[in-house]
Length: 248
Image 1: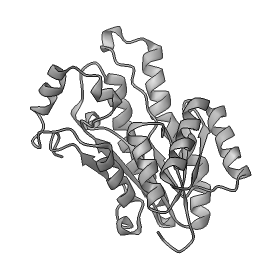
Image 2: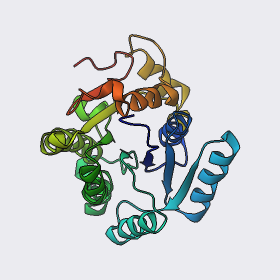
Image 3: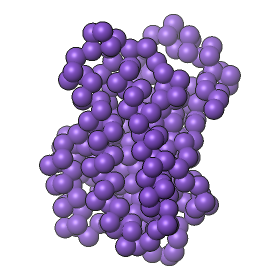
Image 4: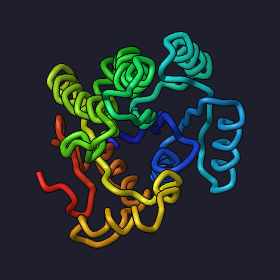
């Protein structure tokens, strides 16, 4: 980190999968970690996991698609004297459908969560990073943000927007020693991919030069690097982790 003072990291959508792996990895790196969930049960599960693996942290309920919920989270952090200088925007949703059949709510749900959620969190937390003259923001994108994917025009649009947002914000805050980067996972072994049929998995694997799915730990490893001092000269970038499925 930038100095010997212990820093806090906020990871949204930390109940399972990539978010949980990132929370765990940053905690093992010595940060005080705060994870968010969309329900009380989810927050309790995060805190139980934190206690089980022996890292320091908290968990709160917050919905990034709801301004009031995010405002309440920010106030709770202030009340508990937690000022995150590391923000990992991982929370996201899918509402897949062909565009001809896609409802306006399916479109809005994805854009409001995946894109507007970044605005709701980055804006208030940037104040503390600016005062500290140090900060790290990592936004989770997806390989489909570059490749496209039929039936996911809303999700693909949101992930492409995240990468554009990342580049713009990096230019705004770089002079304050704040870096902003995106990580774009490919086909990763999570609960979502485990629900696919064997045929669907095999079809995807034939397109990946490395011939396997990635792990959530491999995503967490790159995020941990990006928030470290070793990555202090990297900003405005999208790091692809996809086994060669997409080569920029």
